[in-house]
Length: 494
Image 1 (cartoon, one colour):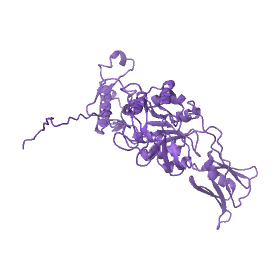
Image 2: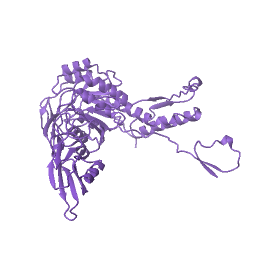
Image 3: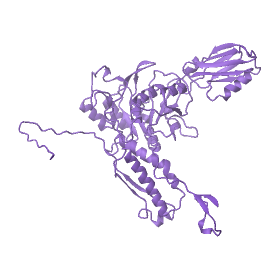
């Protein structure tokens, strides 16, 4: 008896009577859906690698990776904090700088300690070298920071300590030894000279898409469903965000400048040429946020929207969903228990007609802060809803992640059947999860849409149609009242 893996045994060439066992791969009847809640966030920080996506799942992760929060609209930590409060829990964060950022340094007996990353957070790193009380030839180098944590290393020489620090992938500093290495001696130093640099320009946030990707382009291949350039309100980058969103299957959340007017916002969008279901543009009515570190801050609306959508299933719209942590807006001011100014129907109509959304209070469901339109910047009524963008991206990314397994297979009825089975199973599972309505799809993959003239050249086509569930945007209740009204009631026979 011989055991073969699937495809290794040519049954047409057997001539020896024996038992032949083939191990077949389990049949895949459906694809597992991709993440719809991962947020790609580009912003500034006081610490962390520049131009590199960092996985963040909670505020503790964010603080360890990027240092204390800053009172800046572009701050990564602030945006993550806001998004987490709305229900998000999966981030890929990219730090950007203007290039003038610097790493903090300090010296102990001529040995240079340099912060592993640039930024002002490095100025709070302390290094203490202490002699062991029992084995006096050994010393402990303790590196500590109130937010970034502590590390300790033991050794009898600076060379041993430097090697231990270099081998630690989580080290906060690098050790630079001079030509003449001194003997170990107790001492302490606090690093200084770390700088964040000035506010990065728009080009730094968008980044480059070359061999080394930076800024927004560093999010390529990260599996993000949502994206935002924190605090970036420059209209010149909106179409670049749209192109990136279309190519990567991201829903980009952009915003206008703080204190913007409706007429200027509409004009800016038209001048930018932004008309894409890949971008959701929020009006420049920025929000007041009571930060646990920096107090009251005026912040852009992007993180609120991204966090909300990150916690929702892809068929859902942001329309009328309550937002948390908002204590006011530029239009309404700092408010408690209500708003001093609200948007009129005419103002909302002007914004929505231009494809611009806004966060305000009240919402259709009551006196709470919510996204008022649930729209993207597309001028097409069929594709201008949040749910279209997110569900289209979700289905497309799910198919893109799994259907490639069929490439290289022999074209025939068996392949057509397998393709149909996987597609139908995947869509059926989406219906079972409430993402799609039942029986709202059709799949064709057979000889009717794959003629021999195409299959002979290696082409196989699967035609998939999916009908989405609509969003209740205009709820009309017809009320007829009066003494003359005749009311008909249905009775059930007992």
